[in-house]
Amino acid sequence: MFAVLGLETKDEAVYREMLESPALGIEEIAARLTTSPDRVRACLDKLFELQLIQESFEAPGRFLAVEPAVGIQQILARQHDELIERQRQIADSHTSFIRMLSGTGAHSSRGSGIERLEGMDAVQRRLRELSHDAAREVLTFMPGGPQSVAALQAARLNDGHALGRGVTIRTIGLDGVRDDAATLDYARWLTEQRGEFRTAASLPPRMVLVDGASALIPIDPGNTRRGALCLSDPALLAPLLALFDQIWAGSTPLDTEHHHTLSDRERALLACIAQGHTDESAAKQLHVSPRTTRRMMASIMDQLGARSRFEAGLKAARLGWL
Image (cartoon, rainbow, N blue to C red):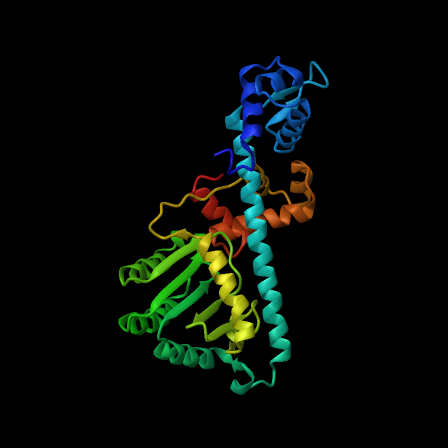
């Protein structure tokens, strides 16, 4: 457990000594652990940075160990925030990549490795073609929370044909789809057919990768109905494959009991928003910047698969977050 938090064996030993004997000084801890005072000071620096120790109010210059239940909970909450931020950075980078391709691929063709497909009809035709031709695997990002009935029907049809030929299908949706009956029904159907479905707190824009040889990504991530780019250039596909593998490794399998997790700050933000605070006034209440408040709210909406703050409030209330 302590190794996961970034602590080495000596750090853990110093922390345990401080828990068991709060009155010990640096020299005494060093003697007990048969190490140097400088090594103990280095451990204290790390423990202080992780907020596992704090300075005494009664005796300035002396440090006290924070109770493990409190300290570890704070660390896990920070790590959760960092993970969500990292996923958001990945999604933003992917969005920028798509926009760059959209700008350079306006007059492209299949021969160039970038083909522009205008409108949903053209996209659906190409999806059917790719599904029919798939020989090995189909990898999909399914962002946007609960899916439409039409989209789920098309996915079942295309996936059914591919699965029947022994093609591997791996799909990642948002955590919020676990609360949507129709999307969850599709996900369970997929796993029953020997496909795989996982969920993540946040995702890049929609993407379909087929056999590592073709990929469909939206022309405009903010309006997927405009159409898609069909990529076949290996140099463009390699980072998309690496991106999928990275997010897949950190996602949650469908058959794993999933619990939405909120940090203390996110819960406090939800409470402020429920009381009618704006981003700016909530930021003042939480002693953070408005930008941080907006980022936290976006993370909460991603976890819930909510398209608006109102919808997020309803789902949060149903889950007992408020």
